[in-house]
Image 1 (spheres, helix red, strand yellow):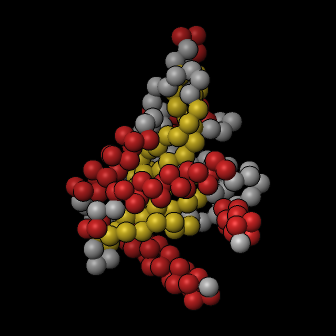
Image 2 (cartoon, helix red, strand yellow):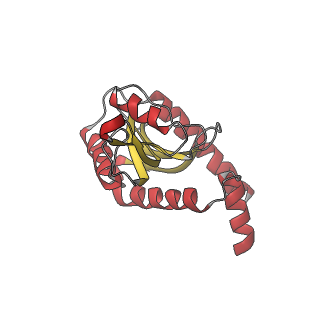
Image 3 (tube, one colour):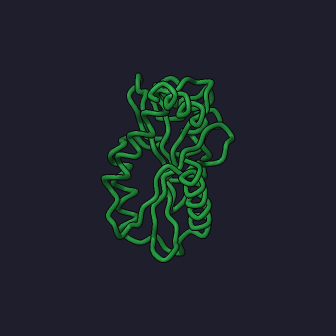
Length: 185
């Protein structure tokens, strides 16, 4: 257990270095992967939404970063009642407006969220990170793009979204997973 945890920490450090290094130019297969993920999720931050919408949304933070989080509809049209997707927080309407103006929107502090980005080592790698509150991102998936990780990445996103929906509000992900492990063990 101890050795496995050390290996996990080492891989997270390496992933952070590679992701921080970034890519000079996003390879076409990475851009296609981001587009596929956005299409699978459905609504993008700032898109028109049904009045009663509440669900997942995504948005690009930079040319090589995709954020996935909970969203809901906000009325931004005043009298004419136009509804748009924003963060599922009190001031979520601001996030929809900022996205429409093409500002770099930071995930709301009180929202658990996922981030998909890419890094360069010996080859191009894709990473899935989990962020909550002001805690730093935790690596939950990493793969070489040459291994065609689309299905595994989608499965990791679904599992992470399940964590977000099922964990109690006052608990962090590590606390939730530790408690879950105790119940199963």
